[in-house]
Length: 112
Image (tube, rainbow, N blue to C red):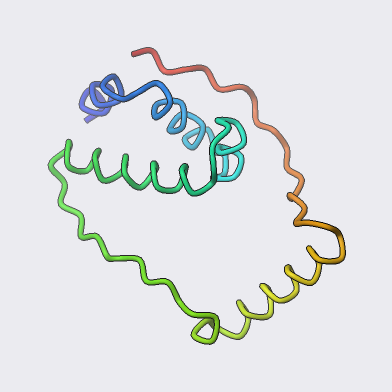
């Protein structure tokens, strides 16, 4: 299985490989986006796309469910409260603040 994954990684674009290296090293989606200079949405969608591609490459069937966006009134009360507090805080402070985190040791690139 390891050789299958190594071969698949060798076929990826360098940016995709780097994204997977960062995620495997424990970087969050946000940290990965910052490190690569792309949007959080791009990292999320690319991780999903690559996961699907790897499953297909390995011959594993996965059932994908469409993502259903909820309207605000359909969200749980706790989520609505958290969003309300975050919005109020962002308004007072002039923007959302990024949580502090400790940086992991540097990640060596995969050898392709």
